[in-house]
Image (cartoon, rainbow, N blue to C red):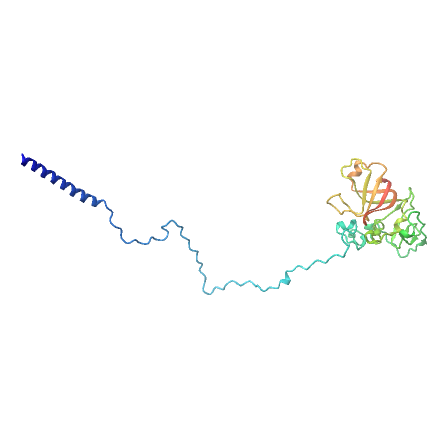
Length: 303
């Protein structure tokens, strides 16, 4: 019996010893061997983009280099010269200045004479033949325009009845309703030569004031109030103007305000030209020296 228990204990001890040896050898197989010396990772292995090298251009050994741009060029060649400073009081001197007309020069000298024939026919000025000798006449005194308000004029009567004023302006007619004076535009705009209220030149030429209260006829371009269906007023002008953007805007010297006896017809409003006959008035209208209007024709008819 003791032998049996001794044999059993020996088998148990032997089994335990065998199991411990097997466990010790198996645990050593699962261990990771120590790593060797680390090696440097190649470029680009860390996820960073690799720059692309710039392409090389093959240039011949004897190829010339590009010419250098000059850096010492004189600046004077590119400097814009300063504009001349206008004289004091030259801007907005009258209504003509609003449209770029030099107020120091007469309007007559600045008009476009390209369409004028010899004798300034474009302004209605008739040439005076040298062989015609006019008879000097004395202009009657005007009840409204006395000596301290006017610049006296000279007058001569030609054999055919025409009147020559200041040796340059020829006027036909006698000033009655049946035979009105025919006023040329050259005479009408000549007031700009001597009458400029902004410059304290306040005397009007007698060659124009003499027609105040007389019947006259003037032909020119017409402009009507915008939106008016039956206008009784219009603007008679030397130059064509549509009232906005086309043409040459008028000044106080080259436009006449017209008041009609009867409203303008549709056909007359559609036309840009006309001949006005009526009672002539010289009515300077100014505001703080700025001339806004000068001439008026009342009780007028339009053809």
